[in-house]
Length: 273
View (spheres, rainbow, N blue to C red):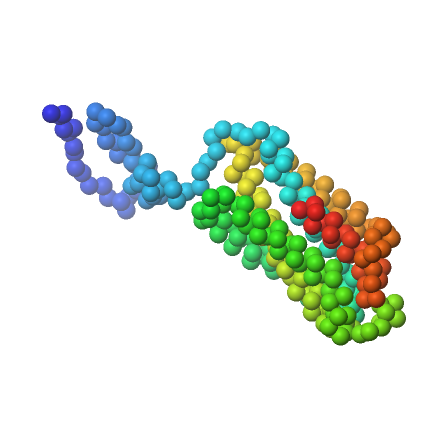
């Protein structure tokens, strides 16, 4: 029969432990267990138990290859490519729909608002996700599908409004407000910003999950580099006014040059995601 270790019971005045660190060490024949009174309760009482370890995200102890980290960061280029296209192409397109300047400023509020609300919420939900495909990938996939739908709504908003009865005049002749097209555009625009933020937050978190303890600086540098590449490509694509010439089949009675440029560039953006 194994000998029972000597146990000593004592009381400690907790009110006097504000600036002190106190540890209790219990030693027996099989284990050494250290209890830190200043640690959180979950670490103090459930250390080593399966219940406590399952609630915290795993920390990768072994580094991944640099090539894998580079591939996982490419989504940053796609997201920034979409943001840059929005900034460079949407304002001219809004003007063709007859939307007033004050209302167009209200539309652009979508980006900051969704960034303030969506990214923290998606980050929390992805931390708690228990999908067999991983915690981040389901949100990235859902956001990418939303981006595809939003791009189609934005690019074809003039055609949809024309079909719904905005006007029967050619886009080069009609100069009024296209109310139905504007409504479709606003829905697509807000959906696009919502989807971009849904993708961007989990993409950063996925990079942190994949990188080892000594790779965080390198991974962050690669991620920022891909963001810069996406911005360069996006603004360069938006600066070109020849998209409607390269893809003339995108033009229609409701969609002239500015609209054709937007359609073509946004469809390329979907492919880049």
